[in-house]
Image 1 (cartoon, rainbow, N blue to C red):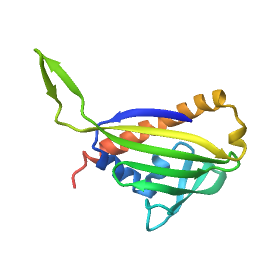
Image 2: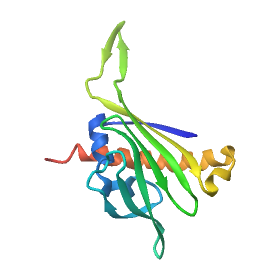
Image 3: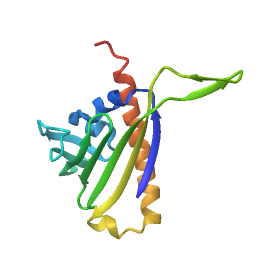
Length: 162
């Protein structure tokens, strides 16, 4: 299983706002190119996103299903990307409160950040045949970029006037 982390300058609730807006999926998921439909119950367990992968004119329609959802904390997805197969993707949000020391006194930063972890593993299709030492660097590169995009969205959303 490939695992990536990034500290995001937003609260877990603010990061969750991005994850829970299914229409934003292609903005942060590398490879997803457009949304076709989002179930009204997204991101509840059992709900689906209907998206396309690839680049025009070579697009494949596929879907992603929520296997588990803990608002503000965790979402587990079964992401389909045929012909490569299916992957189980877990995104975990953990409050990150950096601490520092100064003159022997511990200080705590008041802004809450979020440690976002993405874990991904191929679960069916040709992707499971690729040896882990070959899978991990590709998934690490892809998910590093996905986390970068997710951070941009969450950090910028909190800056806009409401």
